[in-house]
Length: 261
Image (cartoon, rainbow, N blue to C red; front, side, top):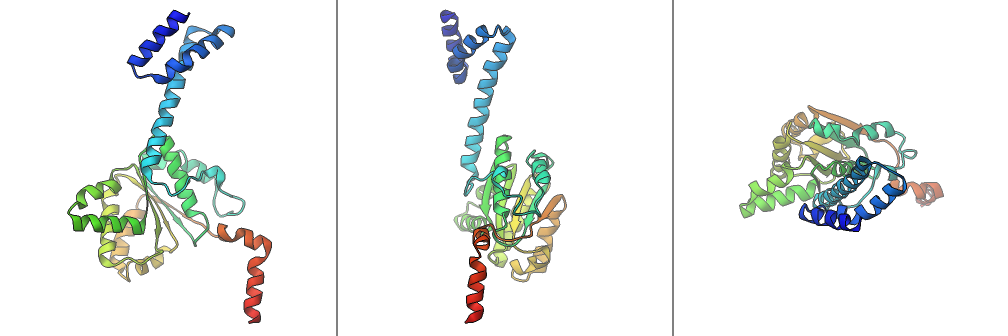
């Protein structure tokens, strides 16, 4: 048995199957104790290697995705934000919408969990070995503007066009000048029907012209491409960041003090 395991380790090393060499002795021992078949033993060994490969791929995708934090759907407080459907989030976590190259837009006031859900779904995409890129709207247009000045715009644009899923956070938190709006339009236009976008915004669609300095034409052009194949989830409710204060009555007390003044 030892000689056979040594040969397995050598073959695994030649094939770059590093996990097989480590787990084969233990799995072989367990298989013998349980009187498992050769095929059961082989399946367990290969499954260990496949799971390790999946984990390495997911870790690599997560490192290049530039997530600002790690939060999962399990971390989301669906009882606090009752307007968010747990069932719908589970369906979206299958990443079928990414395979269909559809978009997902989260709308709602600050603090209601839009970014949390966007990142959580991005993590699910990474687990499916789909390339993901996270950025805020402000960071993306600033990066593209800098690349334009440096003469590297085409290469920088690929950063936002190539991933299977692009997450653009915080559209509407800061107004965009005309040239910045055009840069955003170029990204969305290049990804149209080629790759999925998850977008978060604190503005309703009727307010999007305000984001682009009152330019209703560019707002309409962007929305036309975003909404053609998309799902919109409007989140209503209180801010997560304030929920502990709300429970403790701190906000009410502050309002009473303000009214007293």
